[in-house]
Amino acid sequence: MLVPPEDQLVTHRLQALEQAEVTEVQQVERPTGDGIDVVIAWVDGRDRKHRAKRKRYLADLGGDAEAEPDAHCGRRFSDNDEIRFCLRSIRNHAPWVRTIWLVTDNQVPASIDRQRAERDNVRIVDHREIFRGYERLLPTFNSYAIETMLWRIEGLADRFLYFNDDMMLVDSVEPTDFFSIEGKVKLRGSWRNWSERPDKRNNFHGSIKLMGAEMLGYTPEHFFSTRHVIYPLLRPAMEDLFDQFRPAFLANAGYRFRNRKQFWPISAHDHLLLKSDRARVMTPRNTAYFSVRDCLTASPAVLEARLRQLTEGTVRMACINYLETVVDKVPDTMRYLSKATGPAAPFEKPPPWFWPAARKFRRSWIRRIHRIS
Image (tube, rainbow, N blue to C red):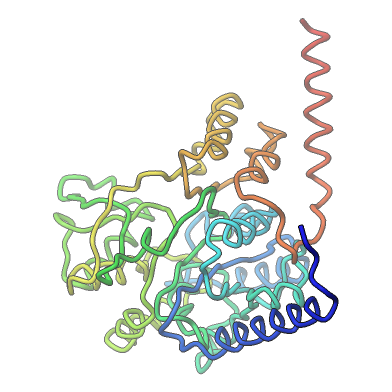
């Protein structure tokens, strides 16, 4: 192969730099209506300041503000490095995402370098930004309150995907997996009839879904129940709902901890789109959901088989609700997630201490099994 002269090499480099600068300008100047963003809600509940703040505000609750029994359990606020895999998976499996907005309570994940992350279009958004004008409602420790306001991020694209921090992509996805070519939002879930199921209506998660549907005129006999998987959302639709139901939205955002009187904003969003023919229902294929119950009751062998499935290309989206329990049962969990979500992002910091500890635990466990056998 011929090597071009030095002056040609310099010319090529200059052209590449100029092209990169043009691309960067185009990305910066792109209007919010173009492209698709990602919004992730994240918290580090192990942080000493955050724990103290939760404890202080929990002690002040009473009356109508009383929290659900599991609304303040430690598991709900735990950070087990899921955010590493969440961010990594988006970068590797959805490189077309314009900006990732990480919504936090004055925190930064220990797994990322903030400056390098911002160069890679990952932005940290504090609760104060999305609650601007309503700062009296802060602090909040309630994901439903945060979801009520997260669409208020300055510069957020009109189309965005909402992730919990325990959600991740485990294979390549395209924009058309979430938004159809004709402009409709693809909702993964199914229609439900709970007219004869009081157990479902009395269930906390079921009741908040139903209340969101009832705001738009749907009934227990006919409403849509979305799967716990990555949620495609339209920012203008959330804004319309806020304008139409402002008192209800502000009341929803005012509960510092989860409360049975709340509605689920995502359910209201989905039913608004269904009512206005801006969405279509899809069967939730190619997804894996490890519920809290699954994580607690499934055997190590079953969990490992499901983790292995994430690496085999048959699943594209996953959610692991109780990762610490899975790691306890399957010490190789982090290796499976690393393989499924792809190479480390350039803004990542080294993994925390419990990764090698899990591998060490597994080796000692295998040695004990060999001794017994």
